[in-house]
Amino acid sequence: MQKIRKGDEVVVLTGRDKGKRGTVDRVLPERVLVDGVNIVKRHTKGNPGKGVEPSILEKEVSIHVSNVALYNPATKRPDRVGFRFLEDGRKVRYFKSNGEIVDLK
Image (cartoon, rainbow, N blue to C red):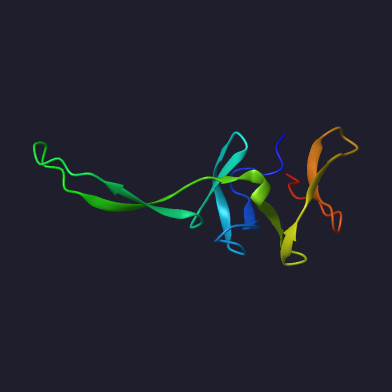
């Protein structure tokens, strides 16, 4: 079980996008792709033979999972996450600051 999952709202802790909030689009091994965060410009070379024009594309690049933290709506701040087992044996995530369970389904 991972601490950050697809669909979670996270806050960027370091880098040029520090403080930005977004939802996790995709989870890769040790990296996450967050909507609207870490956007870079990619210059593509044109090919006149194939009719491809040169262009500059903007795309999102993944961020290391250690540079983001889960957003806690109760405290309105980023928070650390831990794991806990419920009485029925399910493993759930909880916020370390207030002990509130993140994903109770």
